[in-house]
Length: 195
Image (cartoon, rainbow, N blue to C red; front, side, top):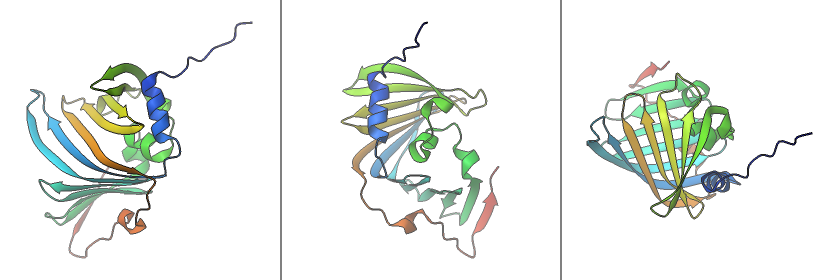
């Protein structure tokens, strides 16, 4: 009888596994640049990323304007302070088929993505994830690791836009104030219900 031999994970997949292994909280500064279809950068954003597994994260954008994307375990809130408005999405649907699903929820990467090893570039191990869902907003996701840390995340969407995130000053498993993952609405704000 033939025995199916599962191939040992490649270096990029191993780096992803090592990064997720034992991860409970994460805190990192990030820079995000968005490239449009002509690959012209349409702005640099940066702020602080916080993660508490399972299910909670917070992107705190400080430049160019204050915006918070907050997942509390049930809903994802997009909070736009200057507009005094917040949009609420049901987390299970909002995160499905996105990197946030396996970063925050212990979901198996293979559930939603086909995994392609890219190899080493710029001193980092790269991994390409291709969404299995044809309806996904993304064509591909790139992850890059060095020293067991996630250094880059790149999202290529079906509209030809590329969002590149670089992470630095990353701290693993340090205590994070749980109130940072709670949305406290303001009375005079508009709450919009996302899909």
